Image 1 (cartoon, helix red, strand yellow):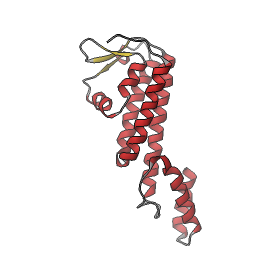
Image 2 (cartoon, one colour; image 1 turned 60 degrees about the horizontal axis):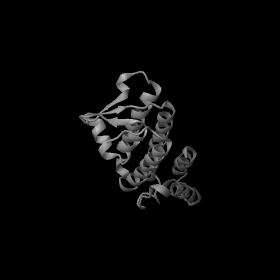
Image 3 (tube, one colour; image 1 turned 30 degrees about the vertical axis):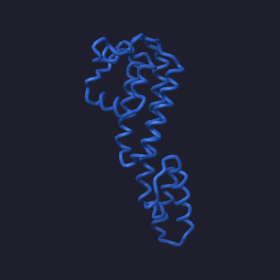
Image 4 (spheres, rainbow, N blue to C red; image 1 turned 180 degrees about the vertical axis):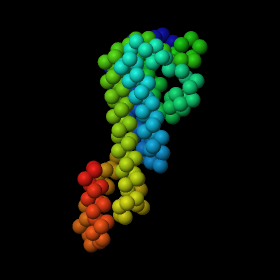
Length: 178
């Protein structure tokens, strides 16, 4: 395969694909949000390390045989594309992705986007777990795109309804965190 230098356009397309994967996975696998957060963190780290330490040789290669890397590249739709968009290329034996063209700015910007995806997944994980503490939400179907609004509405509704004042303190705390 011919090597192409990294570009903002390719990186932007790959980030959009990562965001789409995260939304779809959060909707389809809310019980696995902790693993999704971890996977997005691995992607961010693979980009952030060479950006922050461009002279550190160990960050210039991604070993495809590493179990964690292999799992993330298989599980995270767009992860490999993201690395390639930032200048990584497969070596001749396809054992490594090697960083050929280093643009620390592009790596950092793309790593920041991966961190933003990780943070979104962390927030969704928190919302998913908080749902069980709001009686009207516990049995509602999960929809990641509307989860925050639904949780706020449910908390506000519960605050306005008759009920245990101690439980209402918990709801106010939940709202404060949001």
